[in-house]
Image (cartoon, rainbow, N blue to C red; front, side, top):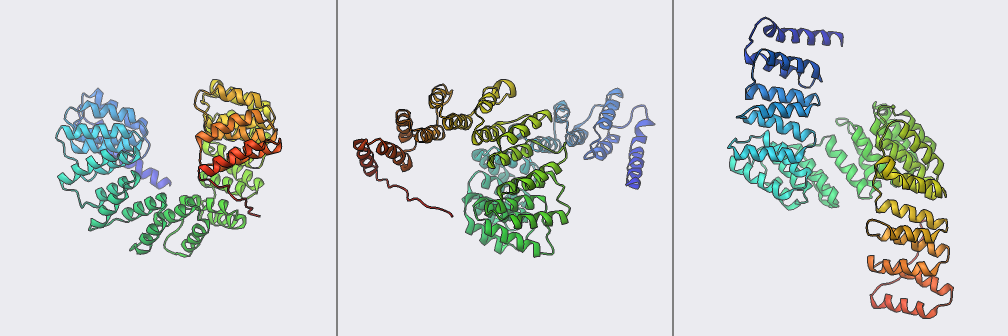
Length: 506
């Protein structure tokens, strides 16, 4: 490490020497310095070299500006990168590629596309480095028409069979839901990158086309860790936990491909869905053996897995292993949700307060977990207090899900009138989750008057749900209102619905 630092310092001194020994250095003397600083997070030094240019009256040309943009972008300063880009009156393709890459990297997808169309309108032709950044932005914005427009422009320039552009096009079409176009393009490609196979497999898995994804996976000439991870996460997302675990075991036997932290995160939900605690522990040990156990994202996934498998103590232990600086909002939300699922309302509250003290800003998912925790533990006033200060104190606008939690909270406590008044004051239309919570509470507390209001709303919002009719019918039967029971049965028959048969998993 010391040798590496000494070598870096020596190389930098060699590059800086022409600048320090000349009153007005040549403009091209700066380019290798900015290129050297790119990717090393040496923003201060880059700013000093930029200031040296300004003091010597050196104006960057398009070539030098491209190097400066890359340096600033790699150091996390997109504003300075944009400022340098706008200084150049006649940008080249190299400069455009540099700023397009910077904007796409920082998630400024609309700006990326805007810059590309400006480039196109000025007659600057893109190359095989240009289009992947632009197509990535189209994919992230799910803008299929814009993606097709860029596809057409790439064809006119002659990049139809370029491997990098072709892979980016497949990824764009897959993410925009245009699987026919993606497959057509894939089949036409003469040289296929492994990334194009992976993009198509992941897309088919997301769409639930499992057999097509399996067929592609089997026929791949070679596989990398992304291919295996796409299959494992795809099975897990489609509720096929056993297949996900089976493929993971196959991967462990492959000596050439080693799982990474993304793979571990993908397989852990499969353990959670099948409540396979012992298998989850083995995967945890396996991750530790690969040196992935200290990864914050893996630890967060372990928290969720252990909680869903019933081991709250292990979940908390994994949460505590995450470094304070690495405990992001996702980690805190996962721990709060873990306590909620185990009915530990006070622990939810304590964890939330601990999160606030750590300086983490909550979001709507945090409050769903917190309010549900209060609900399951009967902490009515505590839940109401948090709900009432969501917006004013924490800048989180209540959504339908939060109102459903509070209606359920009040309903379980028998405060049905308050729950109905809250629904009437909602700033948005109450959905099935809200009225459903009120209807179930009315059944528990035998309040037929409010139950009728809730049921009538649900008959409109989800007319195919026979459970609402049955629930109201049972309430009518309890008080001997047989005429109303017959009317509901006739309505069910008229609409062609049948009562869903009861079942038990035990």
